[in-house]
Length: 342
Figure: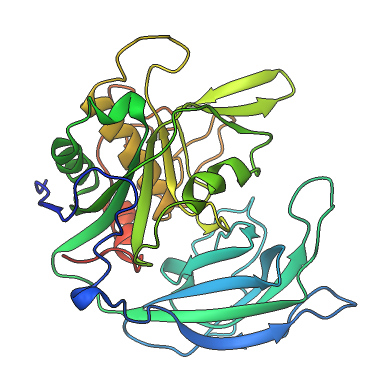
């Protein structure tokens, strides 16, 4: 397993912009591919043609002007439908999630030879309320697979953890868990107040943390560490160790990775060891890059044949055996456009 390299290009300070690109000018990351309208009767768009290429391709899909979307049809070069009954285990099924305002779709695995894709406008929550989108913007990004793959992170730390956390060691440990080089592009500050999600798809409190941060490069992931995460359930508030809205699919403005300090609920306790926080962060970053839990509490499994519960993506990542990734998991992560040459 490869030890990560760490590149620090900013000190801890609020209001410092990240090292976005050479000469401070960020090149365009996404290229427009198509803009389609949602049919008012069927609620579905026409098909968008996706060119085939030997490079890595990802699609950014945005609801216009706002709302949620779901992939309704995905056809590959053989004319096969990739969106099907997800209860059936089939390597030719492309599992996608609801896209909240915007989403990133990585064309790998079953979707590697995607040629046409269309979308349904759907309600953003179970109440079926809110605004349905009337159009969809599709953008594309092509990139070569990196020889020395790495990931750029911007740390967003609360006061409860910033004074205790060795950020250089944190980056090294995350890199070891994910087998990626890690570059910290900047460190920002956020409040230590509790973050409460009213339900699992309520990203508003998460989005508010990111909304006040300086602009960053589009291929940099915000890693928020420190604030305690709570989710409202019918049985009261549940504490979360971490959360990312992108598994994979869409998160709208809440486009980041969120990790609570490991002692939430205990006043004046230490914020948790750097090893624990790195394990949680690597697990949540794995979700962001497209990995699911190998097995859920109800017995349902992910779509990768090689995974089992002895894995970094175990649903309880701080268990002793929750380490390591399979070849299939690593290949999925390496297909993500934010995994780049550092």
